[in-house]
Each structure stands twice: as structure tokens, then as C-alpha cells.
Image (cartoon, rainbow, N blue to C red):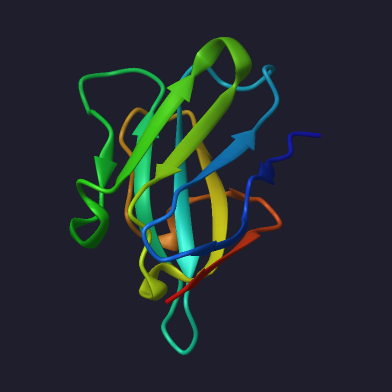
Length: 126
């Protein structure tokens, strides 16, 4: 059974950095999208960044984190990373890894992703 396992959450002070990892099974489709989402109550879960495994579509990060967050895919390890720098208190939330398979086009709607991790908490203090 394919699973997503997130690692790397924690507590940091504003301005600090964290790197989240999401490991999936190597035995998945050659075409897939992996994405990071975050949930900051009372707001709904929202996509932060995504990366496709193949195709011309490139990695994407949401405007509010562009320049601070970066998503990378290590195909050899079936792992994506979210490097988060210059963290702000408003980045606090639960971060989820999500996957969509058999596609080279990554979406920005939660219903497009068929597999979700359990989430990892990020807390940024001022």
C-alpha cells in the first residue's frame, strides 16, 4: 500500500528554518505530482508548493512563501522536500504531503490529490 510519510516539523523562532520531508513508495506511477499543503485554522487547507515528476510543468510555490520556501524532488529516494527559510509566525500550521498519480499536471485543489500524509506540525514563535 502506497503511503506518504512526513518528517521534519517542529518549533522554531521567527527567522529560523526547517526542512520537511515526504517519503513515498518507489513503486508508484512514473508520472505523479507531489505537493505540500498547510492548514492554519480557521483557514482551509491550502497548497503551498508542488512538483511534478515529469513533463514541462515545473515546480511551483505559493506567492506568500515564494523566495522563502523551496520544493525539491529527489526521484532516487522518492522523496520531496520543503525547505522553509525565514519562517514567520503566520507560517504556523499543520503541513501535509499529498500525491496525485498518473498525471504530469499538478493541481491546486485538494480534491485532485488522492493520497495524503498524516501531517506534521510547524510552530513559529515571534
